[in-house]
Image 1: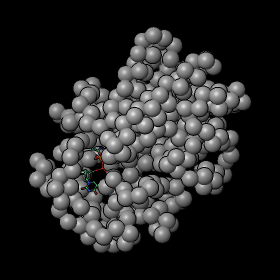
Image 2 (image 1 turned 180 degrees about the horizontal axis):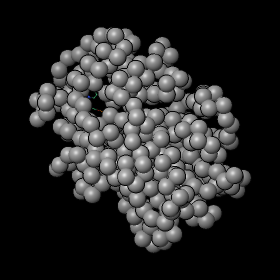
Image 3 (image 1 turned 90 degrees about the horizontal axis):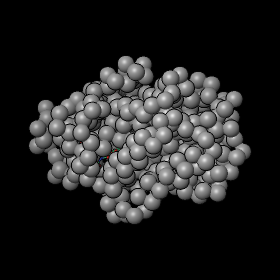
Length: 335
Ligand code: UD1
């Protein structure tokens, strides 16, 4: 059977997507350079699914080694998760971010072209919408106004994909704009394990709950939202992973086109909603204080999920309680 190449398959979203693809019987070949992940993740994907796949520890910028993967495997499509993703770090290291994210995607696309493979799924982000004028955000909303190199790199790659498709419409491309991925696999074997102090809300809450960090700083309580704290569309990472399965199935079923989908639940929750839901789901206290706004943050961001519902038959299944319980279940295994 022909294979799906997954780049960054040991990462947070990549690993959960590998599990869901294997669960529906897809054959995979996976690459990762472990720059922000660990080899155990590959073993855990195999443990969860009871399935095997070929793995290569390589950097996707390494053209020669990447070509070897295409030589040795019958690759039919590519899902690209490889890339750097820390917003703050991207401001400090723009060159590294643009090289890794943009040049990496270009090397990958060039290699795909060389081997005549034209089915591509790309991990983008709701960050490409900048500060949205209206919510819920539809895929037709204006993009731009990104405030950091990480976000801009996503926007650039989206533009490159648009240009590529214009030049050759025999490509099948799906761009998935993720809202806020949280949670972990219910086995507790894979999840989000950021290095250093987490930037994102849920990993931070989990580390406060575990006693690793003292208290959560709630960044601003004077936004124009129901309780003054920032509102986001949190999506369970297993739902998000299933979104990729739906995207690849659409490509195989219909093909020929460039499609863009929001992957979110369509529901917005505030920082305090998340904190309280976490406390309730896990029966644990999470101390917090109100702190100043974080530069670059926006008040409200949530998806209009209807296009993915209609065209991908994608509907999120997991509840806020699942997100909180699974985050904690994974965190406890790290302690
Ligand atoms: C951030 C990135 C976004 C990226 C996404 C990946 C920014 C500006 N945006 O989104 O580009 O795609 O992560 O998941 O960094 N919060 C606190 N205290 C904390 C951490 C967060 O109050 O210690 C609040 C934030 O102010 C925000 C909400 O929690 O209102 C969610 O924050 P976060 O998890 O960092 O995600 P985003 O900022 O939405």
